[in-house]
Length: 246
Image (cartoon, rainbow, N blue to C red; front, side, top):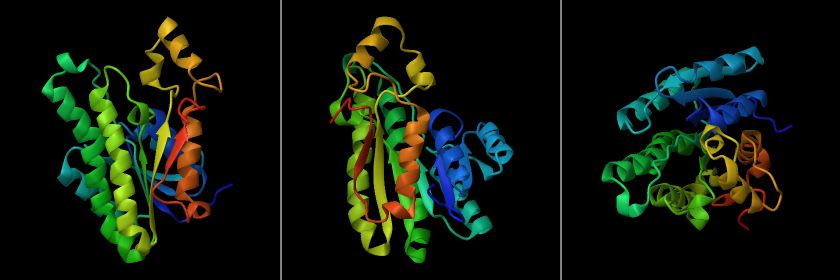
C-alpha cells in the first residue's frame, strides 16, 4: 500500500463524490487531511476518516474567495508546519448550449473549476518551494479532452486545468514539486446519477470497459500521484475513463 504517513494534504470539494473518496483514501494511507468545502459540509467526511482511525480536520472555504483560500492554507501551515499535497477537486457544472448560456453561468464555472485551482496552487507553492517537495494534483475531466455539447464552460475550465498544470509543472520541477492531472471519464457520482435511461446507456456504450467508473478508481489514481512512487512523473494527465478516450 502506498505510504503517505506524516504528509499533510489539502483536498478541496471534499464533502462528497470524488473529493470525499480522495480524502478518505489519502487518510487511509496515513496522510493528515484538511477536508475543505463550503461551510461545515465536510464534517461527515472528517467523521468518517476519524471513525476509520485516520486524521482529518474540516476546512471551511469558498474556493472562489481568494482571502478564504489564503486563510485555509495559512491555518494548515500554522497547525502542521507544512503542506505536502494539494488536490484541486472543487468543481461545478452549469450546462447549457452556448447560444443560451448566461454569462454568469460561464463566469461561475470558470471561477470555481479553474481560477480557484490557480488560487489554491499559488497559496501552497511558496511553502512547497521552501520545503523543496510537494504534489499538486488537479481533477480535470474527459470532457476537457474531447469536449461535449452543452458544456462549453465546463470543458473550457477542465481543459484549462490541463494547460495550467503543464505550465506550472515546468516552473517548479527543479524544486522537487510535481504537478499532474487526473482526468476522470464517466464516474458514478450524484451528478452522473442524474443521467438516466437511454442517455446513460449511450454514454456507457462509449466505454470499452463497459461500465461507469467509481470514485474510488479516481481516488486511487490521486493517491498514486501523491506518493513517492510517482516522484518522476510530472506534467502528465492520468486518464481514469475505462478507455473512453485514448
